Image (cartoon, rainbow, N blue to C red; front, side, top):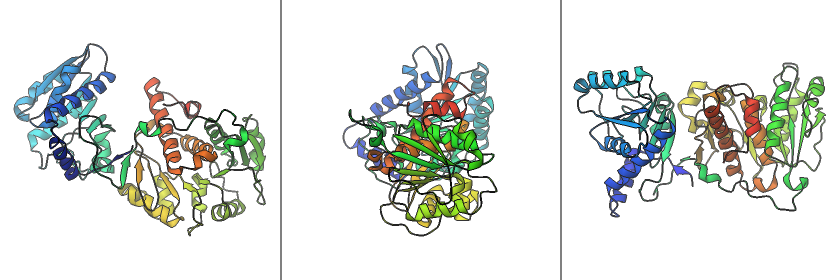
Length: 470
């Protein structure tokens, strides 16, 4: 189940409800420490030095508890009581080239501006450039607002306990939180809260997509039609088709512009390729439509734009609008129960709402609501760090996977194609939001796995692995 994103008052209430059942803080701390150690071992090698910075509070207790479970690692604890007095000890440990620092200096209870000694202590950790694994929250960060108290640890990974805290999802917090991961099985009672934002976990996709029926055939798994590719941007049509095939719909047909038809067709074998024409009529076997990738040529004319608007307004088929097509959508209500999905990055979202990209990023949840409202209650995939999936009302889901190396040409085409290939399948249209979430999660998870294996992967590598992540 997705994990509701909570505020600090809710976290305190959750902890108190747990203690009321007889569960002890000591047992929860032990479990947290064990999980911290497990993650630290994955980030290091045998005999590596791991420096544990432990403060006075429970965050320090969590960090200290990890030492017992750091098998085949040199786990050294620096109990920090006075930043001024303990700074020379920190500098000495850092000179020994620790492979990892575990940050347990401050937790979510910090509520005051840090003095100059603490600022210097934290700056020393950051300047060392040693990877930091933060416990619950990077020390110095306000987990409620995403702002900081004068200085903050710059973590590579933050392991937050129980559930994400709302401030960690703020753009201002991203440079400090790094990759956010949740320790969700540490002895607390089940999360008693429900909220607007929900954190996706891998377990949400167990046995999804479901096993195919033994007598299934091409007609059982849909036919995706896509309108993609124009002069100078023909590669998008190829990438999006190949990504769609990784979702294994029964059939894929690419409709592309006449002046790139031959170059697109020459690169695709099992996908069919036809020339797009303004009077194109999609036949009855089509089960979903994707429009937009590679339609950026300046000489397309108004015919393609009118075609996209007509499909968006009138087609009863699921329709995914991506890239250039996002600028052509009509902003009015739609017939009920139509499946409509838009996949903007922040710049495209800004154009859709006629505001600045900075305003989109400052309140991404609001942007999802506004785009969905403006374009007929469509589903919105607001891409970027912690991609959001939602619409005008109801839950919004936060995707935890992905990394900055997705920032390369063709990455968005890969996501759009894979999503289109999934939504073409009748069975996967029955739970639209889960299918969208799965596509986004899979796309990011594959990128994370590639990044752990090699540093120079390209989008073609990503497409080749879509659907394999489990």
